[in-house]
Length: 497
Image 1 (spheres, rainbow, N blue to C red):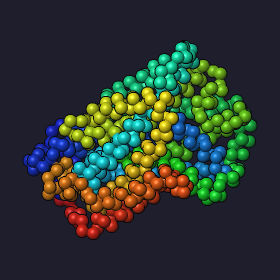
Image 2: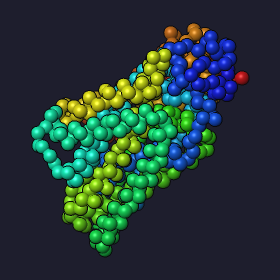
Image 3: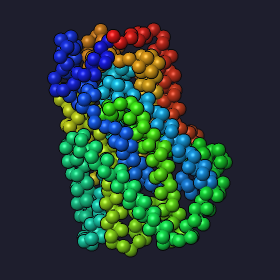
């Protein structure tokens, strides 16, 4: 195999190796999917830390963190332990998927070709892309509500007339966010990196300032409220152990979408050690800090307003201060755009490029993503949010679980961390990843049964209790089946030359 040498094959033309020129298929190759050479990698630990910080710092992320402390009846230390444990679990999982992309410089859709086949990898990429595009549109709408809040606070509400459930201010805000996100992406990954590096710390600064302001207003009553939260109520069905498991599972599920395609980001990191350090700081450490800030702010609202407010927008509405409204609105906008870029925009851009590399670049994939998502977000209020589409999207997300296990066990156990990078871009029948007409039927078999189980947790009430851990169970099940099926007659891994 040509593994380490192949990592230098990049640019807008196929590698210089004559053999590679003949074996690389243009329907599998473009400059965005090509291995990224080390000299072009600029990311370190700080950039990876900010990927996770932006993934955590959303309106939903805040509400989730605050809710965990008041809804499960556990004492605060147990909740913190569950959140931090979930952070370590996710860190372990992404270290596995991130390592091969650091080594070879390839994104997730290309990495999936090793286990699913050079054509078969289009299936998981398409599913991941559909999920991401849907949520990109929805998150764009939610980010626009922050801009609408800002415009209303400064200029007034304007006309009450609506179109598809949104007012003129709402549509203007939605258009502003949509254009801003697309323009940022089209400027290139360096601009996206700068935004994430600026947005992550900025949101923490504002949250700390908000916590200090609420603590000052609440006075000693805040400490009493915190004491009540940390004491816990013990009223969760199933007892404290079930509550702890539910907290861990919920937090792991929150990151499930990014876990499988983490290679889309780790390929930009200079070394594996920098990736791991960034994952440590960005997951368990950042999760603990964010959760602590959310806890203190929520406890403060309980003292000030007589009820624990877990939605940041509700907090701002209770405070009659235009400057706080403006700052909070900008913060919500910054945070939501950050998670949208990380979890919902960059992945489908690569996934769509993988479908037709000769015709679709990552830039074109990003434009397609933005156009489709604009329609989805525009219809969210009037139509999509009312038809239970979330179950459909959750089902697609569950489908991805066994694909993670298949990809990881294939790389670490079956291939012993060796890839023939040139064959990842080859449709020649003798290619290592061609299998049967480009599809690995054994991998499809290993995927089918675990996928049914994962999807059942969305639709079968009896399995609802497993929904938090359905992703992990599906991934483990898929890994075991893939290892067993591939060990029965599959081609053995060939050491790289």
